[in-house]
Image 1 (tube, rainbow, N blue to C red):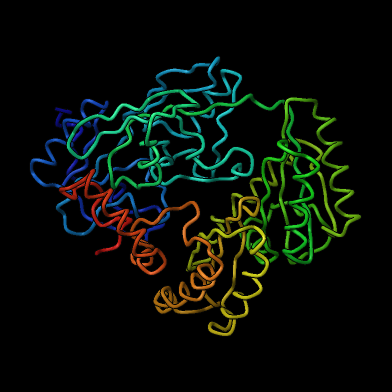
Image 2: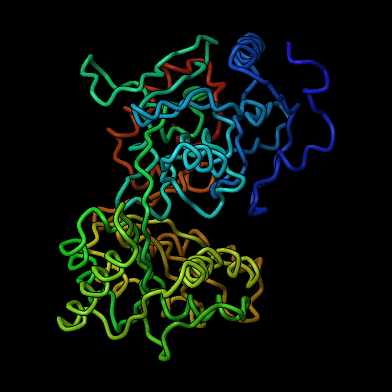
Length: 459
């Protein structure tokens, strides 16, 4: 069906271990189909033999959704050979692509056509669009363009019975019943295997302006966000918050990190604006907006990047946060979403609670404040026993996630659920929500072969 050379049974570690090293399973085999027809045939074979299928893209996920369990009874189905850009329709501002296309490659194809595919995240050089769709990835430009869900117009999906659901329509209006594609976006491969997608494209900006601000409080950051939205409108594309402790961690492990502000501040914001006008006009508009924000007390100091090189260095600093955390050692990660207005109160409530419960622990707080998504991580105290620290995960999570739930937030904003948060979904989702999700799962995957043990908690 796919050729013996594409059925791997040895040296599978790259496919059975997640990139964080947190989950390591055992696969019966790794299957490498080259097209939708081959995916369809493999799914039918697995359904007949009742073999669980773990779909895998670039295996860059944060929650263990793309690796098998330890039973040795599941196959990993990697989409990496499905890597064609099928079509770019410039007049319709769409591109239709295979699920195994690397995100950065899609960005480059769009740019070659004079267009923009705006999904952008740290793993874009290795993550695949099918995985982005399966986890509803977010990234740094959600403020203007939305999550992956907002960028998908159509899907092609191989269902658990081997049938192909063809929803590859480049339509922005289609009022003919249920929007079935939405069932599969964010489903983490538990309902079917995405094999292709039709994606939205946008006019490529001709000008970009980047600034870095310091402030005393998150209340100022939220006020600055609202101020800039009002002054810049749709030109405002990114608004990232970085705590002072987070910046110091990056500088510790990446000494070349720029420090555009002379003073250290408890909080910083990295922001970006883009449009189709001149660079000078955009920088002027951003500077004027920031000057008025300073007069209003929404920030203490700010620097506007004077060149693309300076702007790139600031974004590299932001991207290095995750790398610095890995280099620093064990940390307990959180990927939470709250109404933007609630974020200052959440931080004021949660940081003292964690400090009281875990003296010496080091909060590393950063993320996409513009859309209410914080990466609220807790690094182990210096010199702590790593195994004992990781054993505190559930207790730390309870402090953080109880506070999130109390403010009607989400315990997973953009990383998904996978294995990591599966049991917690049962704690923070209502019984009615879980019953509805299980009903959808039972209808689309009655044999339970699609990514078993992920996302949905055991009944």
